[in-house]
Length: 131
Length: 71
Image 1 (cartoon, helix red, strand yellow):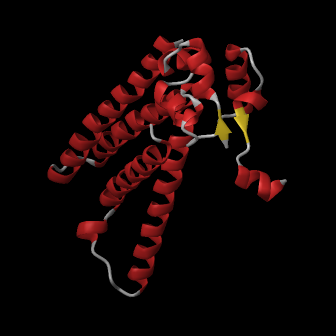
Image 2 (cartoon, chains in turn green, brown):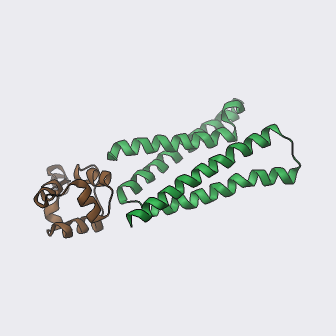
Image 3 (cartoon, chains in turn cyan, green):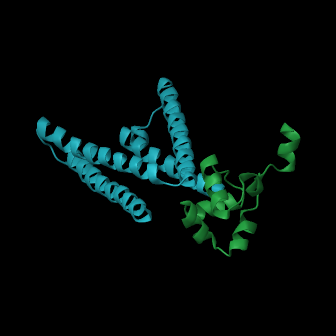
């Protein structure tokens, strides 16, 4: 039982790394090379597939966590989601005032901020429950 | 919420890791419950009471402020 929990957790970490290993080269390729549209779409889809598998593994890992860890994850997601929603709302309102900086707040950056906010939530929640 | 997990654990001479293994939670998770930072589910409380051969009411009690608020 304990071993299978460990394996499920390891799988989610491995697939997170695989996702990172496909996302970064894919963005680099699409940014610095010119491909035909079908090839570009295929390159763009690869990290989406690895991300989907990672999320599937993460949900599986969540289901075998003990209830304290589940609470920590849940609070991390709530904090992460709230902060991301707030940032997007601020960016939208600023764009209505013609204030926007795509160099810092493009789609790619939003993905990064989303993860940063999740980890902030994770840190806060871990501290709260002392795990 | 107060609890007597530490006392019951001492009676059995178990470490946190040993008790955690018996009830199927992580050691850090058990520590969080024991220190009152996390209130466990009914299922986990019952499981804990079973391994200590006691009742949930002995393991967990409302503290004075909770009694005053809802008493």
